Structure formats: C-alpha cells, structure tokens
Length: 140
Image 1: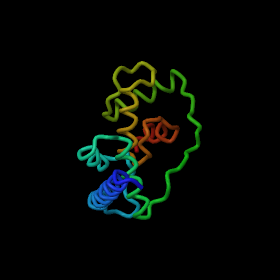
Image 2: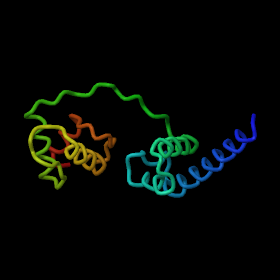
Image 3: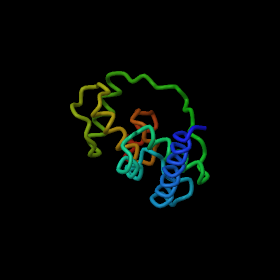
C-alpha cells in the first residue's frame, strides 16, 4: 500500500472511531434509534456528506448490536386521489403541515407524513402506509 493509502486508512479509522463515540453518546438506548430521528442530525454537524453520515451511523449502530437494515417489502401502495386527500385532511387535523390539501403526494405532504410517523413511533420514511392512515383515523 502506498503512503497515501495508509494515511487515508488511518483517517478513516479515526473518523469511524468518532462516529461510534458520537453514536453511543447521543443514542445510549439498546439498538439505538433509527436514522430518521432527530438524533441523527448530530452527524451532519461534523461531516456534511449525507452518504458518509448514514454509513457511519449505521455501522456504529450495527457494532452496538442493532439488526441490519431491512430491505422492506418493496410494495409501495397506490393511493387514490380520495385516499390521499383524506390522509392530508387527517394530518392537518392533527397539526401537521402538508401544504395544500390537493390529493397529491408532494414534498410538503411527505414532510407531514414523516413528522406523523415519527410522532406515532412508525418507521419515518415519508411514505404513507395503511397503518399510518388507520392510526390517524383512530386518533392514536
């Protein structure tokens, strides 16, 4: 390995050490919180590369015993205009911002969905799910 390669490897190890330290300091709970939560925001404060931050946080979580990421179901439900409009209305009633209630899944609606998911303890991926809709309908 060339001298530059050794230096890059050493720098990577040092950054990983700090990533693990920060992860354990800010996420002391078992299996640590998901990356979508507010605690993740500490990473971009000291390294603005989102890819690096996600990788470092995930590695630190795995080293702490968290399970690997799930591939998910790869099934994204199709939402009709009426279903999306109902979801937006329910989000607005619960105090979440969705932009205009227009039956379209735009950036503002995704942000509202994510905020609701976080508040309800659901995976915060900004994709509306039937479970989210049912919880909003039930007022939970």
